[in-house]
View 1 (cartoon, rainbow over the protein chains, first blue to last red):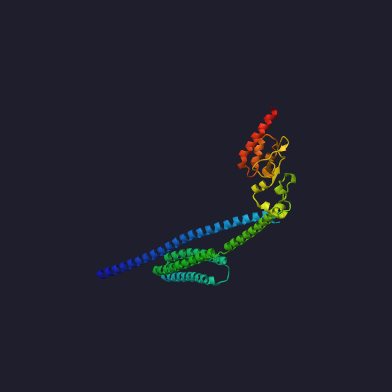
View 2: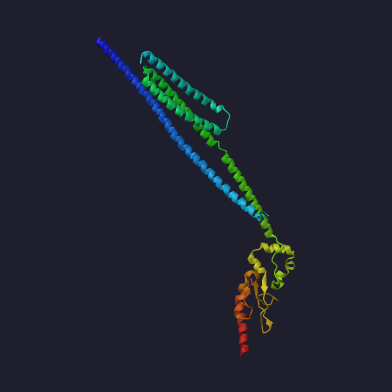
Length: 84
Length: 274
């Protein structure tokens, strides 16, 4: 009787250990996926920042060129003798 | 708390979890249908970002609920399994949302043709302005190339060669003017020379050998050489005699003969003084 109780206890402990390992595996999988997500977010932030910086630089260059053109046009309009 | 009450609570907890799950799935389904909706790219990106923010708050609420349910529930294994499933679905939904947002942002950045269009417009404007400037420059150049008010020198200061160019070359005045304008300034200076009164020694003009038959020697300076040369007095001193001769074209080679003449005139003057 006592031997049977000991066997069932051992079985229960084994089942609990197995369940515990399964839970640990699940948690490790989830944490790994979350880390991957985090890495992806970091990489995405870096690439997005660089692309936005490139776009900003491009817009700055365009703005400067537009200002130069405006100055040239205003100079030409103030001195119409240039075009006569 | 009795066991039936716990069971009821567990059931109610499970039903609430199921409701939360359904809500999550509904959000995912509604998210998956969003790309089909018409709208600008910016609106879609904003909508995806808002959904991501909503998902953040929903996940926090779901985590709190699962924790409470696990602590209060009698059948913890069931709650644990449902929580596991919920976490798996939530991670998948999260990845889906992040992919959607990132792809839309990427598309937005790559599909930004406004900057390229603006660049092309600016290039077009620049080219137009350049064309206008080129036209203005060409007009100014044409005005410089032919002008009715070309500089005319007084006849007194023009050499016989420059006075009658038509006779010598047989071309009209305009053509001559154009030709002169196209020539280098140095050549122009050589053509337009001033003629000083002929240097006379004892009332006679001096004839220089090897200069030219029938040409009386006279000092000639270029008109455009400046006032420093013209302001020099044309006296019969020896220094000016030789200095002026240097300005004639092709006279450099005859320097020695000029020095001989100077010596001759010096001897004559010394004879008179004696």
